[in-house]
Length: 361
Image (cartoon, rainbow, N blue to C red; front, side):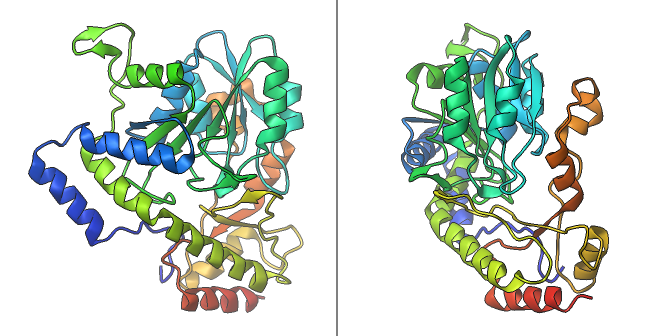
């Protein structure tokens, strides 16, 4: 593709940071991870950050630290990446699928409230595509029912909700550093929290349940982050604000120039800072082309697109027994398309996307 829909941005500074770790011989978890954790916690405005080896590991460890297990249920959005729900299942608990808001695509607080059962212990809200969910309203539901609130912030590094950054908005927050995220460590993740006991529990769980070397007090996992990953992360964290501002600039351009094309451009809720992990438009039923034809037309002209996500999680075969009615999620799965907005998209690329889309029949 001339303009891919996603592209990691790494340069010589990241290469040199990795080389320093390689030359040191300390490749596994160590002081570089500790430094990255400290700087990431400060960036988010959280008391603690614990580095792990993937966003899925972050979700799993956070849920386990919160005491989620067999016999519990956890409310999650139906329109999200699979790991939001599968991490609940990995704990032996049951995901309950809430529908999402048709404008922001984020978890619907009313749908959350309607799902609460006696066995419900937590809610995971996803800052989908880089826009924070309605944390205040979901928090009210959680407080009313004494539930733990977890942010799935895998796509929202640097996003803000009423002046507070993602990672500091709930009891626990979980990030991913997959290569196409707003910042990367190649693979990796992070759990943030203000709760000392939860942070200690996460650290225990990600290191085989060791309270000290060779003393295992719980069954844990090998979810540790490496110094190599953390070295990349430290460089990327320093570049994150610049990356995000370019994403936001690109998104503003597309907002202006795709208006009037018949596509529904992203809606940004009041009081939030959207960081556009993805720039997601809707192809409505009365648009001149079907979604597939629209994507094919752009591909023919060298513009990458993607569908996030074509099958709501509640409709995945593995969750057939928990299948719920989530009509908004169904509609979005059938109509959304992601367009290139990442920091490598240039002004010339944007003009080409504009002219191409506006020139379609």
